[in-house]
Length: 299
Image (cartoon, rainbow, N blue to C red):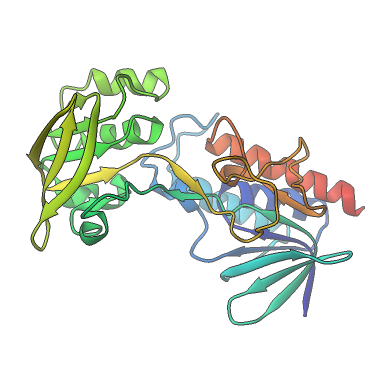
């Protein structure tokens, strides 16, 4: 069985920051990621609110990974199925049957996009419905596009898409945007974006591709012909790896100020953690604190 001091599950900003700080503390660090380093950050077109940086999200992640590797952290592309606390160590169960024994584990799996769960969503995902404007927006240049949501991500996606098309409709179920003031004002002043408040999406329609959306605005139901819809209605925690850990009402892991969970030796950092504010800088800070706490515990 492979044994390490610290196993980190997830290679987004929280996991990469934890890997760097853990390795700098002379811990034997293994970071496990099922896809590629970056996570949700790679969906961001440009970094505007990370202090001191104006590079792309990809460049930030690449630099963070290189820094962690330079200090000795090891990376593996693996799918983690479960994390379990034993007597004096944690066992990380990988898909395929391999087990890794770690003196401590940091869960940095982040969160996934929340679905609308309405008729047609499953059928037209990838056929006009997307959850990432920077990934799929270029396919719909000068097309009519709906963005669903009213938070930071929805406003950021709408602004990005407004560079590609002058026919952007942002629909939000409430009577005001929940995004940060700067992001909200930028959307409201953008001539390429029409904002419809008190509006819900009821269903998606089409043949082979999405062609229209059933909307309801202030009790009035109508069909809107569109070529694409980008859904940006928040995140859901990826916390199923440790079913016993304490979570908040939305499923995010509850930690103390050291980032330790309710299970000794298991920490959490980044978007997976119960937090009032989810940003790259917060995730990176969480990762640093978690690795520092692990180092103090193990030394």
